[in-house]
Amino acid sequence: MHRIIITLGPFTVYSYGLMLALAFVIGTYLAHMRAKAAGLKPDKLTDLIFYILVFSLVGARLFFVAVNFEYYKSHLFDIFKVWEGGLVFYGGLIFGFCAAAWFSKKHKISFWKTLDILSPSLALGIVLGRIGCFLNGCCYGKLARWWGVCFPGAENPPAFSQQVFDGLISPVARYSLPVIPTQVYDALANLIVFCVLLVLEKQKRFDGFLFLVFIILYSINRFVIESYRYYEQNFVVFNSITISQLISIILAVSAAVLLFKRRT
Image 1 (spheres, one colour):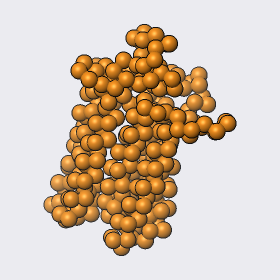
Image 2 (cartoon, helix red, strand yellow):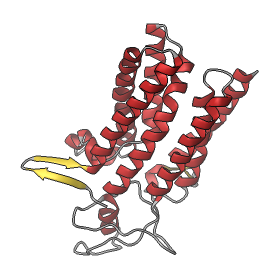
Image 3 (tube, helix red, strand yellow):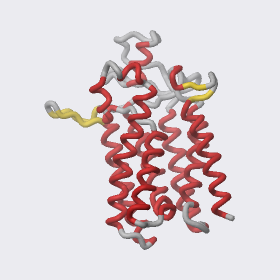
């Protein structure tokens, strides 16, 4: 865990923000390469990616702030500190999807074909984003029974500060208690999803196939990972599953239905 990369006077480079930037750059490059192969103008794709990025960041942050409204209503400036963590992928996915639909309709480009082009970039972007989560110490798992990762308290990562708040460790402790490295598991799972999408592209029979497969695979993976993540009670619904697990079920079923309809 290395939350802060470098500090130069008042300027601080956070590992989480750096990994998000890398995800954007690498994902955009990959999408451009795939767009050329698919016959889509790269300049249009660049504009689309920009809109998706902006809307996704807004949606991901709004979702996180809404769930943690009790804190942010008295810390309004902290709402804008996205470089320190605090983004919910599903919020970004929904807003980004709407941005893609609007842009595709306005510029008369194939909506589903474009989503297929972007899907591997999205999966790879999640891999890099989760590495950023691990370096930042957020999106961590429950206390580990067998083996886990201890986050150092020097930079006060979320995993450490939460355990201090819960009274599990002392504020002067050097490390947190070991937790399940769910960020690493999520990154590895999405790396597999990325590879699967590239393989399945050769078997693609209709536009939208890769994107719908991505949604199904990601939703299943997210549902499983959520079972091992640490959450406060405000993230839990029906006293049994998290909000993200509920959304995973809805998206997986919806994508499966659309996959069947578009196939027939």
